[in-house]
Structure formats: structure tokens, C-alpha cells
Amino acid sequence: MTLRSLARFYDCRASCRTGDAVNHLAEHGPTGSIPVASYARTSEDVRRRDGHGVRHQLRINERTAHEHGCTVVAVYSDNGRSASKAGEMRPGFDRLVADLARGHTADGQPITGVVCTADDRLYRRAEDLARFFAALTARPGRRYLDPQGVRDPYSQEGLLEAVRALDVAAMETRVRSRRLSDWHWARAVDGVPHSGPRPFGWQEDRMTLHADEAQLVEQAIIDRTGGKAVRSIARDWCDLGVSGTRGGRPNAQTVTQIMTAPRVCGYRANKGELLLVPETRQPVLGQWEPIVTPTQWQAVCATFSPGSLYLHRGSGAPRLTGRRTDPRHLASGFLRCGAVRSDGGVCRGALCAQKGRSKKSPYVYSCRSCGRCSISGPPADEALEQLLFPEAEGRVQLPEPMRRRWQSGEMGLEEKRKIIGSVFTCCTVRPGVKGDRSWDYSRVEPVWRWADRVAPTGATVGDDGRSATGRGRQAG
Image (cartoon, rainbow, N blue to C red; front, side):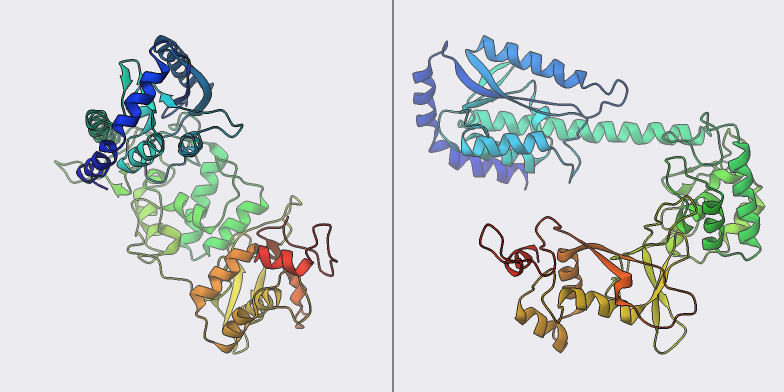
């Protein structure tokens, strides 16, 4: 939605409500106690992490409301939430919009306006501006307050002022983004280490090598160059009890990213690209201690083909380009490893489809994290189908037409996977018994998406008069 179309939309809306709004404001009078909602937001709270910015804004809102004869009856806030990023969740703003649209809070307290320190606290995107003004003007007589005074949201001038504030906020966001990008680039060409969590293999200063981790990385690069599989290296790290700098357990992808990151040989990258000195076209050298030589780093990167899934987040190495292909197998992404780790915990790694070695198992689902759990593909897919459409009464009861379409072949793979995703969060696969070729469907244990609404097998009619089948149908 463009700013121009937004203005045209609300111009028509404002013209039919201005009269009612003025009369309603006149009834309250300038000194009446008018109930308003107070909203505050900060983009980040990374240093003190105590919400002081939000508290300061709410105090200013209280003062502003008092100066204009209003009383704050409800408080909404979003601490450390950006309003300029698409898809960013702002629970406080969402509750404010919902309460404004219905005219009162969840406990029934009427709301006839909003007070905020500035427009950009409420919105920095046209979509949010449209949502806010639609909710604010859903009823006549509403007002919007800020430290500059009272604004009539029904008038054309009030809307144009909001649109101008949005334009200024959008420009400010672009300028700040550009400045931040330039700041990171300048640090990169100076060889300054990355900010954020420390990289695996270095101390907290990001300059000095971490003796144990650096030795692991160096040996992993030597082993990989010598032909060892990445999953085997990751498994060795897991057996040693190694954890990442954020506490995660190593897997093939993270180990690959550690080995192929340019920092291991002292090179500096920025936004996934190796930085070069403009005059010499040689790689920019970082200020930290390297783990291996550039020759060793280039050799380990050469062991991966361009577009390797292991490298799609790595920097300075072959990257995965274009969109990922859609899953080709029914259970891809839904199976989790149930193998027990050496520390007694469950692996919970994703089982990914791989090419099988026999006609009965043209593909198998194997764990990439620990490599200790795999299951034949066709029987695993069949196990999911039996969980969805059991022969006897089961945990869920999907519609009969859906079962017929599924089993007749009319339903495509994408639609089938959507049905699975609506019923299961995932399915845990227990490791099989070595040497036992019999198939056990109970190895696949489902984790129901709505466990609290799914009745146990054989349940009788409950107090609400609904049977287990009825509740199961609701869950599905």
C-alpha cells in the first residue's frame, strides 16, 4: 500500500466522520477526564535490558494525558521490538489495535483515544499506519495525543500529518540502515573481527585462539581434506562433548561453516563475500590469530561442490543460489532422531531423505546430527498414513472424503504434507535393532500438534457430551 493510496482511502473515511468527532469532543470538554490508552516502544534494549526506555515513554504519556484532560486507563508496550522490519511481532501494538477496534479493553474499560510520545513509536510502515488509523477511527469521537498536542484523526490534516510522519520515519530508517552498513564495511576492511557471539576457535576477545577449539578446527580441516565425511567429524565432536559458542551441539552443517569460514586462515569477509584490498586485489587480512594457512582453507573449501546444502550459510565459499527445491518425499522435515546421546539426552536431530541401496528402500531417512538413526523411507511414509487414517478408531478422525482422495492418488504431495503439518508437530523415530529386518510401525512416535485437544485411543464420551472422535476431528 502506497502513501498516496492510503491518503485517498482515509480522505473519504474522514469526511464522513469529522462532524460526529467534533460534537463528541465538545461534549467531553477540555477539562473532562477522557479514558485513553498509552503506548510505548523501543527498538532495542541490549545494554541494561531493564525496559527503562519504555518506562520513560509511559511517564511522558501520563504527563501528556493529564495536560489535555485525559486519564490513562490501559498501557501497551513493546520493548526491544522494531517497527520497520516486515514480519516483526509486536504483541503490545496488536492488542492496542484490537482493543481500539472493539472500543474497550479485555476487562471492559472503554477507550476513546491514544497517547504516545511520537508517531514512529506506533508505526514505521504503511501497513501499520493503516491498521492503527482504521482501529482508531472505528468509532466517532476518538483523539490522538502526543507532546505536541491533540490531533483529530478524522480530519484530512490529521491524516496528512500522520502520513508525513511515516515518510520521515521511513527516510530515517533508510539512512540509519545505510550508516550501519557503512560502519560494518569500514570495520571489515580494517580487519576488525565480527561483532556478536565469539566465533568457535577464539577467545572472547575474538583475537586470541582458544587452544582446545582451535585444535579441533585444525584437525577437522586436515581430516576433511583427507577424505573424511563431515558427519563423521561432527559425530566425533559430539562424542567429545563439544558444544558451540551458543550452547548447541555440532552437526554437519555447523562444522562445515566453521571449517570454511575465511576467518580460519585470517581472511576477512563481509555479507558472505571475501573482502579484497582495492589496490592489490588481495584478501583483506584480519587482526586475529589464524588457525590454518590460506592454502589449507582453500583446500577444504574445494572438497565441497558449489551449491552444497552444507555451505548455504557459509562465507567466502561456494554458496547455495536460487530457491531450494521442494521436498520430494512425504515425511521430509517431520521426522526427528530418537537416539540417546552419550550424555543421556535425546538427539532430536532432523532425519533427512537420502538415496537408499535397495529396491525395497529406494530412499531412507537418516539423522545428520548423530548418524545413529535411520529408517527406510516407504515404510516410514506408510506409518504416517496409518497414524492419520487408522483402521480402528484412533487419536484423530479425519474426514472420510480426505482419506479416499489420499489413498486413491488424487491428492498431491504438497497437500498431503500440509495435512501432516496440521496434525503433527513432528514424529520421533526410535533407532532400530541391529540385525533385525522386521518392520515395527511403533518406531514412529507422533507428537500431536494440539495434544490438549486430541483424545486418547478408546476414550469415552466426556462431560461436554462430545466423543473422542469429535474432539479428534477438531484437532485435525
